[in-house]
Image 1 (cartoon, protein in one colour):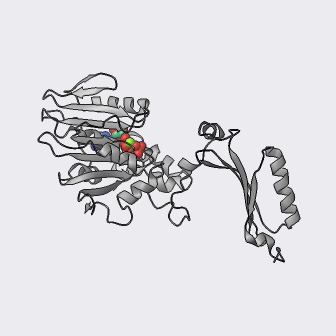
Image 2: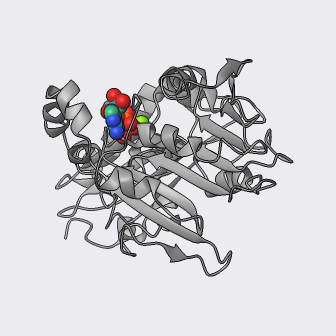
Image 3: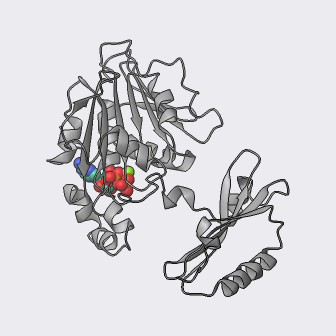
Length: 333
Ligand SMILES: Nc1ncnc2c1ncn2[C@@H]1O[C@H](COP(=O)(O)OP(=O)(O)OP(=O)(O)O)[C@@H](O)[C@H]1O
Ligand SMILES: [Mg+2]
């Protein structure tokens, strides 16, 4: 018999051999660790049961198409129909495919009974609440136990909530733990490209590319490190999510006439001074669109620089807020 696919020893095998008692499996880590491939194989388990309903979710159409193309190589006995595609197995079991670009992305599966849910690139989901909405449909109505399998890399918009949910860095990896509220078990299984000999064989230069990345990308994508933002004052800060190109910021309301504009100022002489230009939309989205940063400058000079920048923007500033040290007797001490 021709073997179409078999898991690599180590992390891939571990991810695919979790018992039914573990409800949520997070298979994460560096790029190219074999996560997508493992997810395709995981979703097959149980498809001999006629009542089985599987669902895979990816971010958008084109990602989903790529996943379907890869899955077709392995789901050779299934018939693929519909848009988005549905795999139908000889037993009657079905694997549905979906993406998160529609407006009702997180509620479109409400009321479904999903036996196994695969979420590819979980980090693309910005909030845990959305994930929980998807999870609410995972319940079994057949002989196969319900289970969820998520793949993810660090550094995406969902970085912080994922790290918290799976207690990455706090609890031991590769060991399941029970969530005290839901009483269900979760496990985080990390893999790096070193766990995927296939990719190293197919494209030996890929690992060099990962090694050559600038920080913090290298730590995240080569090492699968979730601690890259540790120690940051704002732990939720994530450049992938919080830094926008101007055109994308405009889509979110930046630049509208009705917005309020302010300057925030923190004085410093030997320690740095900083002024930031802020715009707030009526629904309280805050955009920081310029800054002045420096040290050891006379207050008059800093004042002039702020004035100059302000003239460049030509925007009406409603209020400027300065920290109390602006008004101390000797501001250059
Ligand atoms: N067990 C396996 N047998 C054969 N090929 C495999 C196996 N596991 C992974 N591969 C191949 O290795 C390559 C990378 O694997 P995969 O896409 O699953 O990695 P990934 O962890 O999802 O990567 P990324 O982080 O970029 O999403 C693919 O070409 C895939 O087909
Ligand atoms: Mg992948």
